[in-house]
Image (cartoon, rainbow, N blue to C red; front, side):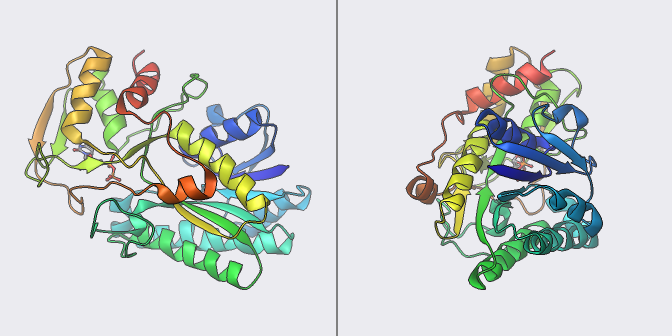
Length: 322
Ligand code: UDP
Protein backbone atom coordinates (compact mmCIF):
# COMPACT_ATOMS: atom_id res chain seq x y z
CA UNK A 1 0.00 0.00 0.00
CA UNK A 2 1.36 3.40 -0.98
CA UNK A 3 0.34 6.57 0.81
CA UNK A 4 1.11 10.21 0.09
CA UNK A 5 1.14 12.16 3.35
CA UNK A 6 0.76 15.85 2.61
CA UNK A 7 1.97 17.89 5.56
CA UNK A 8 3.79 14.84 6.90
CA UNK A 9 6.59 16.88 8.50
CA UNK A 10 4.18 18.69 10.82
CA UNK A 11 3.17 17.81 14.36
CA UNK A 12 0.27 15.43 13.75
CA UNK A 13 1.37 14.40 10.24
CA UNK A 14 4.79 13.21 11.44
CA UNK A 15 3.24 11.07 14.18
CA UNK A 16 0.96 9.48 11.59
CA UNK A 17 3.90 8.85 9.21
CA UNK A 18 5.71 7.04 12.02
CA UNK A 19 2.70 4.84 12.65
CA UNK A 20 2.16 4.07 8.95
CA UNK A 21 5.84 3.20 8.42
CA UNK A 22 5.71 0.93 11.48
CA UNK A 23 2.81 -0.89 9.79
CA UNK A 24 4.69 -1.39 6.54
CA UNK A 25 2.87 1.24 4.48
CA UNK A 26 5.11 2.79 1.80
CA UNK A 27 4.99 6.47 2.64
CA UNK A 28 5.93 9.55 0.65
CA UNK A 29 5.88 12.81 2.61
CA UNK A 30 5.02 16.02 0.73
CA UNK A 31 5.67 19.18 2.72
CA UNK A 32 6.86 22.74 2.09
CA UNK A 33 8.56 22.81 5.53
CA UNK A 34 6.94 26.16 6.33
CA UNK A 35 5.89 24.90 9.74
CA UNK A 36 6.86 21.26 9.31
CA UNK A 37 10.37 20.29 10.34
CA UNK A 38 13.19 18.44 8.67
CA UNK A 39 13.89 16.67 11.99
CA UNK A 40 10.36 15.20 11.89
CA UNK A 41 11.00 13.36 8.63
CA UNK A 42 11.06 9.60 8.92
CA UNK A 43 14.01 7.92 7.20
CA UNK A 44 11.76 5.13 5.99
CA UNK A 45 9.62 7.59 4.02
CA UNK A 46 10.47 9.31 0.76
CA UNK A 47 10.41 13.08 0.99
CA UNK A 48 9.25 15.50 -1.69
CA UNK A 49 9.57 19.16 -0.86
CA UNK A 50 6.72 21.04 -2.45
CA UNK A 51 3.80 23.37 -1.99
CA UNK A 52 0.12 22.52 -2.31
CA UNK A 53 -0.41 25.93 -3.92
CA UNK A 54 1.93 25.02 -6.79
CA UNK A 55 0.12 22.54 -8.99
CA UNK A 56 3.28 21.43 -10.75
CA UNK A 57 4.79 20.51 -7.37
CA UNK A 58 1.80 18.29 -6.66
CA UNK A 59 1.91 16.78 -10.13
CA UNK A 60 5.58 16.00 -9.72
CA UNK A 61 4.83 14.10 -6.51
CA UNK A 62 1.90 12.18 -7.98
CA UNK A 63 3.58 11.41 -11.31
CA UNK A 64 5.62 8.40 -10.27
CA UNK A 65 3.90 7.67 -7.00
CA UNK A 66 1.12 5.23 -7.86
CA UNK A 67 -0.48 6.15 -4.57
CA UNK A 68 -3.44 4.24 -3.21
CA UNK A 69 -4.40 6.97 -0.79
CA UNK A 70 -3.63 10.53 0.28
CA UNK A 71 -3.58 11.78 3.87
CA UNK A 72 -3.92 15.54 3.97
CA UNK A 73 -2.58 17.48 7.00
CA UNK A 74 -1.26 20.62 5.30
CA UNK A 75 -3.14 23.60 6.68
CA UNK A 76 -2.90 26.78 8.68
CA UNK A 77 -4.53 26.22 12.06
CA UNK A 78 -4.83 29.33 14.17
CA UNK A 79 -8.44 30.41 14.74
CA UNK A 80 -7.32 33.86 15.84
CA UNK A 81 -5.05 34.44 12.84
CA UNK A 82 -7.79 33.25 10.49
CA UNK A 83 -10.04 36.09 11.68
CA UNK A 84 -7.34 38.67 10.98
CA UNK A 85 -6.02 37.25 7.71
CA UNK A 86 -8.81 35.19 6.15
CA UNK A 87 -7.16 35.37 2.73
CA UNK A 88 -4.22 33.29 4.00
CA UNK A 89 -6.68 30.63 5.11
CA UNK A 90 -8.71 30.81 1.90
CA UNK A 91 -5.55 30.27 -0.10
CA UNK A 92 -3.75 27.62 1.94
CA UNK A 93 -6.68 25.67 3.27
CA UNK A 94 -9.35 26.01 0.58
CA UNK A 95 -7.38 26.44 -2.65
CA UNK A 96 -4.66 24.08 -1.41
CA UNK A 97 -7.16 21.32 -0.65
CA UNK A 98 -8.94 21.72 -3.99
CA UNK A 99 -5.57 21.53 -5.73
CA UNK A 100 -4.91 18.26 -3.93
CA UNK A 101 -8.32 16.81 -4.84
CA UNK A 102 -8.03 17.80 -8.47
CA UNK A 103 -4.51 16.44 -8.76
CA UNK A 104 -5.69 13.18 -7.19
CA UNK A 105 -8.34 12.85 -9.86
CA UNK A 106 -5.88 13.68 -12.61
CA UNK A 107 -3.68 10.79 -11.46
CA UNK A 108 -6.59 8.50 -10.63
CA UNK A 109 -6.01 8.41 -6.87
CA UNK A 110 -9.44 8.01 -5.33
CA UNK A 111 -8.99 7.80 -1.58
CA UNK A 112 -8.26 10.49 0.97
CA UNK A 113 -8.12 10.90 4.74
CA UNK A 114 -8.59 14.54 5.70
CA UNK A 115 -7.63 16.36 8.92
CA UNK A 116 -10.72 18.18 10.04
CA UNK A 117 -11.43 19.82 13.36
CA UNK A 118 -14.02 20.27 16.09
CA UNK A 119 -13.91 23.93 15.00
CA UNK A 120 -16.57 22.97 12.42
CA UNK A 121 -19.15 22.84 15.23
CA UNK A 122 -18.74 26.34 16.67
CA UNK A 123 -20.45 27.03 20.01
CA UNK A 124 -21.61 23.81 21.62
CA UNK A 125 -25.40 23.57 21.72
CA UNK A 126 -25.17 20.41 23.80
CA UNK A 127 -22.56 18.16 25.37
CA UNK A 128 -21.18 15.71 24.35
CA UNK A 129 -20.84 17.06 20.82
CA UNK A 130 -21.65 14.25 18.42
CA UNK A 131 -21.41 14.39 14.64
CA UNK A 132 -25.07 15.38 14.33
CA UNK A 133 -24.42 18.62 16.21
CA UNK A 134 -25.13 21.75 14.11
CA UNK A 135 -22.17 22.91 12.00
CA UNK A 136 -21.79 26.63 12.71
CA UNK A 137 -18.10 27.56 12.89
CA UNK A 138 -17.38 30.79 14.74
CA UNK A 139 -14.01 31.45 13.14
CA UNK A 140 -12.81 31.43 9.55
CA UNK A 141 -10.41 28.55 10.21
CA UNK A 142 -13.35 26.34 11.23
CA UNK A 143 -15.25 27.49 8.17
CA UNK A 144 -12.38 26.39 5.88
CA UNK A 145 -12.45 22.90 7.43
CA UNK A 146 -16.20 22.71 6.94
CA UNK A 147 -15.99 23.94 3.35
CA UNK A 148 -13.38 21.28 2.55
CA UNK A 149 -15.56 18.60 4.16
CA UNK A 150 -18.43 19.77 1.95
CA UNK A 151 -16.27 19.51 -1.14
CA UNK A 152 -15.18 16.03 -0.15
CA UNK A 153 -18.83 15.07 0.27
CA UNK A 154 -19.66 16.44 -3.19
CA UNK A 155 -16.73 14.73 -4.89
CA UNK A 156 -17.78 11.48 -3.20
CA UNK A 157 -21.40 11.97 -4.22
CA UNK A 158 -20.25 12.46 -7.79
CA UNK A 159 -18.44 9.15 -7.62
CA UNK A 160 -14.97 10.66 -7.83
CA UNK A 161 -13.50 9.80 -4.43
CA UNK A 162 -13.93 7.98 -1.16
CA UNK A 163 -12.90 9.75 2.03
CA UNK A 164 -12.68 9.95 5.79
CA UNK A 165 -12.83 13.37 7.47
CA UNK A 166 -11.46 13.16 11.00
CA UNK A 167 -12.54 15.91 13.37
CA UNK A 168 -9.82 16.21 15.99
CA UNK A 169 -10.59 17.74 19.35
CA UNK A 170 -7.58 19.06 21.34
CA UNK A 171 -4.56 17.19 19.97
CA UNK A 172 -1.65 16.97 22.41
CA UNK A 173 1.30 14.87 23.57
CA UNK A 174 4.37 13.43 21.87
CA UNK A 175 5.30 9.99 20.65
CA UNK A 176 5.29 7.68 23.68
CA UNK A 177 8.53 6.05 22.53
CA UNK A 178 10.19 9.47 22.30
CA UNK A 179 10.90 9.21 18.59
CA UNK A 180 9.58 12.66 17.68
CA UNK A 181 10.64 15.78 19.49
CA UNK A 182 9.96 18.63 17.06
CA UNK A 183 8.65 21.53 19.12
CA UNK A 184 6.32 24.16 17.82
CA UNK A 185 7.84 27.64 18.02
CA UNK A 186 5.65 30.24 19.77
CA UNK A 187 2.80 27.89 20.59
CA UNK A 188 -0.66 29.28 21.35
CA UNK A 189 -2.19 26.05 22.66
CA UNK A 190 -2.53 25.40 26.36
CA UNK A 191 -0.38 22.29 26.83
CA UNK A 192 2.85 23.49 25.17
CA UNK A 193 2.47 26.78 27.04
CA UNK A 194 2.15 24.90 30.33
CA UNK A 195 5.27 22.91 29.41
CA UNK A 196 7.26 26.05 28.56
CA UNK A 197 6.23 27.55 31.90
CA UNK A 198 7.19 24.40 33.82
CA UNK A 199 10.57 24.28 32.09
CA UNK A 200 11.29 27.92 32.95
CA UNK A 201 11.25 29.19 29.37
CA UNK A 202 8.35 31.38 30.42
CA UNK A 203 8.22 32.96 33.85
CA UNK A 204 4.44 32.62 34.01
CA UNK A 205 1.37 31.96 31.93
CA UNK A 206 -2.20 33.14 31.71
CA UNK A 207 -5.42 31.30 32.45
CA UNK A 208 -7.95 32.88 30.16
CA UNK A 209 -11.09 33.22 32.25
CA UNK A 210 -12.03 31.68 35.60
CA UNK A 211 -15.64 32.83 35.57
CA UNK A 212 -17.08 30.18 33.26
CA UNK A 213 -19.97 28.00 34.40
CA UNK A 214 -17.70 25.07 35.23
CA UNK A 215 -16.73 23.63 38.64
CA UNK A 216 -13.51 25.65 38.95
CA UNK A 217 -14.50 28.44 36.54
CA UNK A 218 -11.93 27.60 33.84
CA UNK A 219 -12.67 26.09 30.40
CA UNK A 220 -12.96 22.36 29.85
CA UNK A 221 -11.51 20.61 26.80
CA UNK A 222 -11.25 17.06 25.46
CA UNK A 223 -7.52 16.32 24.96
CA UNK A 224 -6.48 13.52 22.64
CA UNK A 225 -3.00 12.02 22.49
CA UNK A 226 -1.33 12.29 19.11
CA UNK A 227 -0.44 8.55 19.17
CA UNK A 228 -4.16 7.82 19.48
CA UNK A 229 -4.78 10.10 16.52
CA UNK A 230 -2.09 8.29 14.54
CA UNK A 231 -3.71 4.90 15.13
CA UNK A 232 -7.09 6.34 14.12
CA UNK A 233 -5.63 7.48 10.80
CA UNK A 234 -4.31 4.01 10.08
CA UNK A 235 -7.69 2.50 10.89
CA UNK A 236 -9.47 5.11 8.76
CA UNK A 237 -7.08 4.31 5.90
CA UNK A 238 -7.93 0.61 6.16
CA UNK A 239 -11.63 1.42 6.34
CA UNK A 240 -11.56 3.59 3.23
CA UNK A 241 -9.38 1.15 1.30
CA UNK A 242 -11.87 -1.61 2.14
CA UNK A 243 -14.42 0.39 0.15
CA UNK A 244 -16.62 1.34 3.07
CA UNK A 245 -18.78 4.40 2.59
CA UNK A 246 -17.43 7.89 3.38
CA UNK A 247 -16.81 8.55 7.04
CA UNK A 248 -16.99 11.79 9.00
CA UNK A 249 -16.09 11.25 12.63
CA UNK A 250 -14.90 12.90 15.82
CA UNK A 251 -11.61 11.79 17.32
CA UNK A 252 -11.63 12.45 21.04
CA UNK A 253 -12.01 10.79 24.42
CA UNK A 254 -15.42 11.92 25.62
CA UNK A 255 -13.92 13.26 28.84
CA UNK A 256 -12.81 16.75 29.69
CA UNK A 257 -10.24 18.51 31.88
CA UNK A 258 -10.37 22.13 32.96
CA UNK A 259 -7.43 24.47 32.39
CA UNK A 260 -6.75 24.54 36.14
CA UNK A 261 -6.91 20.74 36.37
CA UNK A 262 -4.35 20.43 33.58
CA UNK A 263 -2.03 22.88 35.33
CA UNK A 264 -2.42 20.97 38.61
CA UNK A 265 -1.55 17.66 36.89
CA UNK A 266 1.43 19.29 35.19
CA UNK A 267 2.76 20.52 38.55
CA UNK A 268 2.61 16.93 39.89
CA UNK A 269 4.19 15.37 36.81
CA UNK A 270 6.98 17.88 36.30
CA UNK A 271 7.67 18.59 39.98
CA UNK A 272 7.98 22.26 39.03
CA UNK A 273 6.00 25.29 40.05
CA UNK A 274 3.85 26.76 37.31
CA UNK A 275 3.08 30.41 37.94
CA UNK A 276 -0.05 31.73 36.32
CA UNK A 277 -2.27 34.81 36.28
CA UNK A 278 -6.00 34.54 35.91
CA UNK A 279 -6.88 36.99 33.17
CA UNK A 280 -9.78 37.92 30.92
CA UNK A 281 -11.59 35.34 28.84
CA UNK A 282 -10.07 34.81 25.40
CA UNK A 283 -12.47 35.81 22.65
CA UNK A 284 -14.42 32.98 21.07
CA UNK A 285 -13.60 30.35 23.74
CA UNK A 286 -16.57 28.09 24.55
CA UNK A 287 -16.80 27.01 28.21
CA UNK A 288 -16.96 23.26 27.62
CA UNK A 289 -15.94 21.19 24.60
CA UNK A 290 -16.38 17.45 25.03
CA UNK A 291 -16.97 15.07 22.14
CA UNK A 292 -19.28 12.19 21.51
CA UNK A 293 -17.08 9.23 20.59
CA UNK A 294 -19.52 6.51 19.53
CA UNK A 295 -19.15 6.90 15.79
CA UNK A 296 -15.40 6.35 15.70
CA UNK A 297 -15.88 3.25 17.82
CA UNK A 298 -18.72 1.88 15.72
CA UNK A 299 -17.11 2.56 12.34
CA UNK A 300 -13.45 1.91 13.15
CA UNK A 301 -13.45 0.10 16.48
CA UNK A 302 -11.24 2.96 17.61
CA UNK A 303 -11.09 4.52 21.02
CA UNK A 304 -8.46 6.52 22.86
CA UNK A 305 -5.87 4.54 24.85
CA UNK A 306 -3.22 7.05 25.83
CA UNK A 307 -5.25 10.20 26.33
CA UNK A 308 -5.55 10.47 30.09
CA UNK A 309 -4.02 13.80 30.97
CA UNK A 310 -1.12 12.26 32.94
CA UNK A 311 0.05 10.19 29.98
CA UNK A 312 -0.26 13.18 27.66
CA UNK A 313 1.71 15.46 29.98
CA UNK A 314 4.41 12.86 30.73
CA UNK A 315 5.02 12.36 27.02
CA UNK A 316 5.36 16.13 26.60
CA UNK A 317 7.67 16.57 29.58
CA UNK A 318 10.13 14.14 27.95
CA UNK A 319 10.43 16.71 25.18
CA UNK A 320 10.22 19.94 27.20
CA UNK A 321 11.86 18.82 30.43
CA UNK A 322 15.48 18.71 29.30
N1 UDP B 1 -5.74 28.64 27.47
C1 UDP B 1 -5.29 29.35 28.58
N2 UDP B 1 -4.04 29.91 28.51
C2 UDP B 1 -3.23 29.79 27.42
C3 UDP B 1 -3.70 29.05 26.30
C4 UDP B 1 -4.97 28.48 26.36
O1 UDP B 1 -6.00 29.49 29.58
O2 UDP B 1 -2.12 30.35 27.43
C5 UDP B 1 -7.08 28.01 27.52
C6 UDP B 1 -8.01 28.46 26.40
O3 UDP B 1 -8.68 29.64 26.79
C7 UDP B 1 -8.94 27.26 26.29
C8 UDP B 1 -8.04 26.07 26.66
O4 UDP B 1 -6.92 26.63 27.34
O5 UDP B 1 -9.95 27.34 27.24
C9 UDP B 1 -7.53 25.30 25.44
O6 UDP B 1 -6.99 26.24 24.53
P1 UDP B 1 -6.18 25.83 23.24
O7 UDP B 1 -5.76 27.08 22.53
O8 UDP B 1 -5.11 24.86 23.61
O9 UDP B 1 -7.22 25.00 22.36
P2 UDP B 1 -8.69 25.39 21.81
O10 UDP B 1 -9.63 24.63 22.66
O11 UDP B 1 -8.85 26.86 21.89
O12 UDP B 1 -8.65 24.86 20.42
